[in-house]
Length: 77
Image 1: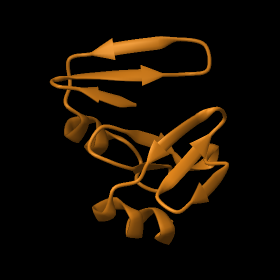
Image 2 (image 1 turned 90 degrees about the horizontal axis):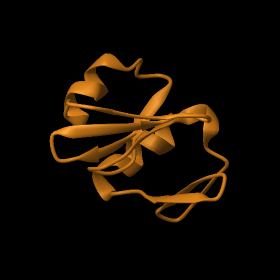
Image 3 (image 1 turned 120 degrees about the vertical axis):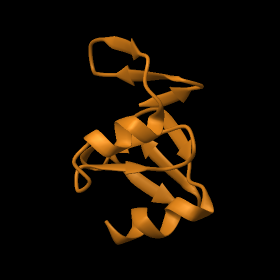
Image 4 (image 1 turned 45 degrees about the vertical axis):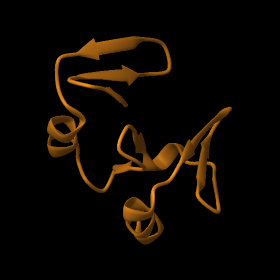
């Protein structure tokens, strides 16, 4: 999921959805053990993480930079 101001983009394997929600609102609805916020703009599913290297998380061909405030939570999960 990607934040775009007051909108959220949800990318699935086959579709892309856009909704009028903030990333903070979406984060409250998601089951905590299954998803993790990596920076101020992205929430990703934990089961899809392929590798973590330094401050970068990879899912397939996509890389996400992990912000300092969220790194400890990711490593804990």
